[in-house]
Length: 593
Image 1 (cartoon, rainbow, N blue to C red):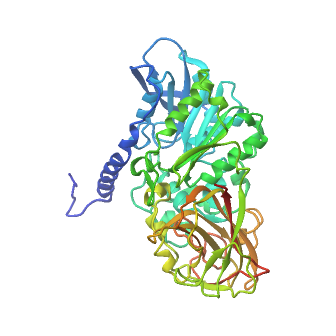
Image 2 (cartoon, rainbow, N blue to C red):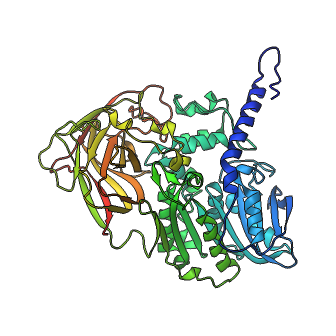
């Protein structure tokens, strides 16, 4: 390798070049297996032709560039469109393989770089241009000789949002969309109950600040104040600063909200995601809201599978230690083809008759159709926290059962933001299934309360929304409380089922912000999102309560100061109550077996 030494030292640009080469090699090894896209249906066309860097003009004169994959045959075809900021030619998005796949199935596939990214002109500012640019792109496509007038859209994450952005505009030729692993509410992408989604949001924002894709020097997540974390990394990025200075609901976020436009959704939508995806709650919420409000409410499908954001189960076939068998990610492609064949080609493949919910039941490792969410047969069961005041660590006296507490001592721990729980630093939340860690190290900490059931006498299916009700006091004016639902295997392995967080000042709503009074007891609702998980006979169910989950979320400095500006961190004494008047508990959605 030519390191291009200069004067006995490496130039910064050379080091960046070297790191990029290593990074690219790792990406190839990781992503190339995913480019082998399987299907149950034979290819219609063997030959495919590709037009590269085709200019598509927007209403303001800016040109966005696309690659167009076509069957090598005469005639017109339905079109599937995706619009992404990650590079239409980059192998880690495997768009050449996907474009070829769709062309072989008898579709035109259009893959477009969004405004300001890669080959496309204009200024890159995330999200704000996607509605109008998407509409203009649809206009251009429908006027091409090869388009038969039927267009669908597909894509995940940001290019799931590009679908949602344009859908309420009701372009007459957009017949359906299939957004995966994303939310219609960008505020929720950046903040969860007031806590900054540092690993998801900060990392993504920083990596996307250039014309192309990534910076190769990592952020220092420990840096304070948060507002200058981008500067410390060598990049002063306006979008990062805008996100940090808008922690609460504000018109800055409202302009991007699609969830207030559900009544304008008039097309079928395939909502899909994974139980270990960091957007799973929002995928479910979007389906619920569109089902309730949209004119197209009957044509909404929800599919949640055994995947994370990076689809890492395709290579591992497991989630943590949990073996999921042969289910991986291949189902995604067959699902999309059935959906598009029905709505864009008019093929009577029975898709419209399938139940509107399809979930993968972890532990049983089977797919199961349902007719609603949450399931009508759910038995919501409260499991209460108990102890004699010493639930700290797995060696404490914390108990979890269905008996309501009576007179019990409260539990106490000290949350020190200088020493937060850091298991997330070892776990890329986009690859959560692959990198999920045994939580034994967490449960050895004295700032973690541990409540555990006795061994299960039979399998327990937990399918539905999860929530913890916590009665707590803090010595601080603001702090965080976290909760984690855990499956304890007979050999001691501790498997995270789901987790959640609430920031005290946002305990009521993301617009209703108020600090807490030190020493006063408040009731907190901690949303642990949702799951479909079977804990096996002989296992135990456990709940961990603490106050940090770094770097999945930022550290609460406990000061109550303006968010993002703190350079000081203070300790907080946290008291958790579980007695007759303050029965802290977790609500589990139990499905009769």
